[in-house]
Structure formats: C-alpha cells, structure tokens
Image (cartoon, helix red, strand yellow):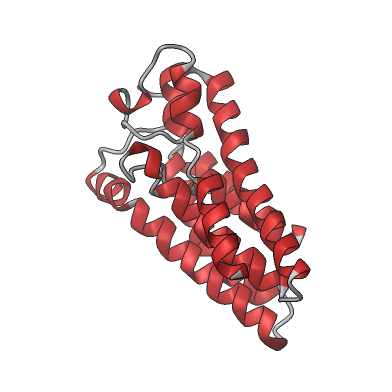
Length: 205
C-alpha cells in the first residue's frame, strides 16, 4: 500500500508540465515551437534564459521534493527510506517524461533526474556529473550530448563513490543504471542528429 501511495503521488508530482505551463503564461504553446519539447532547453531557446532557467528550477524541484516525500512516507511505514526514494524517483521521472496532462508526451527528464540525483546521492556524485556535463558541453556546445554523457557517467560514479556494501548500494546502483538507460532512450532522436551532424548547438536557433 505504501509503495502504491508513493508511486501515484510522485507520478502526479512529476507529471506537472512546468515548461508547458510557464510558456502558456506568455501565450506560447511550447509544443509548437523549436524542438516541440516541453523541457527547459527548448523553453530557453524559444523564450530566453529567464524562462528556461525557471523551467529547469521547477522540473528539478519536482524530482528533489518527490524523493524526499517518498523517503518520508517509507519511513512512516517503517520501510526502507532509500527504496522509498528510489520508487519516488522512478515514478516522478516517468511522470515528467510521460505526463498524463499532455497525452502522455513530456520532456526528456534531465532536469527532473538532476533533482532526483541531488536528493538521493552524496554530493560527490552530483559534483562528478556536473563536471562531466560542463566539460562535454564546453567542448561541443551540445546540451543533448552533455546530458547523455552525464547520464552514462552516473552508474560509474555511483559504483566508485557509493559504498559497495549492503542492499542499499545495489538498489542505488540499479536505479542509476535505469536512469542512464531511460535518458539515452529519450535522446534517441538527438543521437541520430548528432551522428548525422544536424543537431543544434547551444546558442543557435
């Protein structure tokens, strides 16, 4: 019962389409512009940095708050808070990626995953991913490539940094591998464009 409660509530939290709602306040249907994605990157390109950063903050906050709520509910029912956080994280990311409010079409989950990672993992893991993202972005100026690289780095960072003892490690490691796979899956079109040399660099329309 507790797991179902966490899953439903955190899916609903994740399904709040921040990018769509923020753009709507300015009379824009973000699904009809740019890459047609409701994520922070597309909002930034179409509407400017102020709105893009606002959407990033909203989306990452969804992930962070959902994980903390999942941990709290699990603790209340005398269950593993780590597993509660993982269940919350997965359902929140799925809610963002497949929001029920927009025909189960959402963002790519990078900002939401960032909030989830900040809530679940040691700050050293977060810093490692941030460094990977910044370096790859600085070299190539591709947001998608930087996001994919950070996602791929996550399981390695967890394996190297999180203590490899007990069930909690394997729960977190398995979750990190799932997040990596989901992020790569959601970036399939970007990967094709990167391979074809047609992916848009940051700063270009």
